[in-house]
Image (cartoon, rainbow, N blue to C red; front, side, top):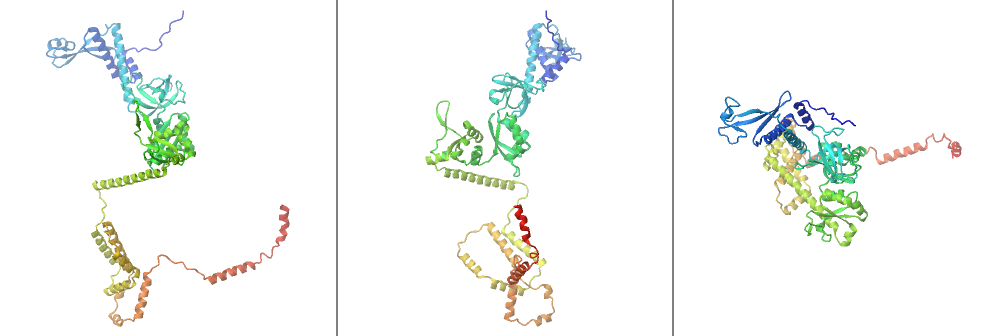
Amino acid sequence: MPRKATNTKKKASNALEAFNEIGGFHNLSKDVIEDALSYAIEKAYRKRNNSDGAKIRTVVDEKGRIRAFRLWDVVETVEDPDYQLDLEEAKDITDYPQVGQVLEEETEIDNFVRGDISTVKSVMFQRIKDAERKEVIDKYQDCVGDMVTGIVQSVEERFVMVRLGADVNGEMQPGATDAIMRKSDMIPSEKYTVGQLLKVVITNVDKEAKGAIVMVSRSSTELIKRLFEKEVLEIYQGTVEIKAISRDAGQRAKMAVVSNRDNIDPIGACIGPGGSRVRAISEELNGEKIDIFKWSDDLQEFVCNALSPAQGIEVFLAEDAPEVATPTRNSRDGKVRENSQKSLVAAVPESQLSLAIGRRGQNAKLAFHLTGHHIDIRSQEDLDEMGVNWRELVDKLHEEYLTKKSLERAYKQQQRIEELRNSSGTIAVMPNLNEFEEDEEFAEDNFDEFVDEPTIEQEEQATVEMVEETPVQQDDEEEAAEFAPKVEETEMEAAARIAKENRRSLAERRTTTYTSKFESAEPEKAESAKGTKPSKAKEEAKKEERRIEKKKPTFNAMHPIYTEDELEEIENAEIEEEMSASWNEDIDYEEYDSYYDDEY
């Protein structure tokens, strides 16, 4: 007769060791286990003694023994005898009782029968299960959207159980729980086996669920986002941002990215050197293809990129073309209603129509999920036959985008100005016209420090010269300005005009010649000797010299070193020297003819 199998698991020698084992397995503290035991014994005690209001506190002493104490409230008038005592009854427990005091009386639990022990066991494990459930909810409710690694625990037809927080062998560890992955959350092309390691993303934590409360998925777009964050450092640091993801799990995915720095290519950063980064993610998703393109706030450009690899696509609003039917849908009540989303029409060349739609409409479906708009893909030839002026509608939508961007830019500038005005720091303010006059005086004072002040006679002479040298064109411009319609100039224009006049007057002073103080400090005899009025020819010569001095060249003119005749003589000499060279007379080139003839 075969021997009956025995349980080889080592039992705990006392309650203290049992509490430690239970707490470690369920990742619960000792206080939680003791609280569950107290609640269970209280339930069993009430059921045994028919006392619904009795209060029991249970403790485990140092030796591992379980001791139970009944709690009594001391009151003046007893209303519930299950847990209240008056002063006279309380003297049986303590000599000097006081009203409001809580007394403890040890009670025996060794006389519990099998039914009482079964009640304690079931209530205690239910209490532990609720505490464990609360721990799981507190741990995972803030992890929705995070990627975790799990082990396949069981594979069913409609779902797969994935154990989270287990060890390599799949054994439960403190804080581990079983999550469920429904059939809609699986990748259709994948086959799962027990013990397989999987990267999944937490999609939901259901507090009201009776079974598994954590839901995980491998078909969610969040999984692709988390995989790129782990693989691509630029995305993890926030330099490259993922704006939108659309996915047909197991087949193809499209992802729109944008860079927050001009010197970083977002597409190249996601692909990696030689495609290493995107290849590693594709292998994790069972060979799923991932298309990466640049995101744009221009709706036309965004839709064109979403419909890639098709080229030459033009986009316009369907509402601007009555000839194109607006997509409709049937509601549950049977009524046909127009879709509330904005509908677009993509005009595609006939040769690119199949690429834009994709196999079984996959490319168009992914573009719809990316943009959030219905896209009606039509060939450009069909639109021309329908009489739709789609080119004009494309330009109209582009102009609306440019107008919108300009308004946004102006609004941001206005907001920035308001922030500067409301801030406590210093604000740059445009100067008034009076400030330009002060600047002019300041410039003149600084100029006098470095340049000698001209005499009155020199200023009068410079004024006469400036009048004489004014061209006729300036008079014509002044006459035209008199008859031209006067336009009110703004404060900024007036400030710019005055500043320009100041610079012009300063330049005129610098070019005007005058006698320095050193030259004027000569003996009076020399002045009397020069008292005679110079002739008219000398005055004109001086004016001509001043005119030449004023016209300073803006650059140094380059003059040829030789004249044309000299260059011709040099060229002829070089030719004669070459013809008379002796080296061409000493060599007999006919000697080497036989060498070349033999070779060829």
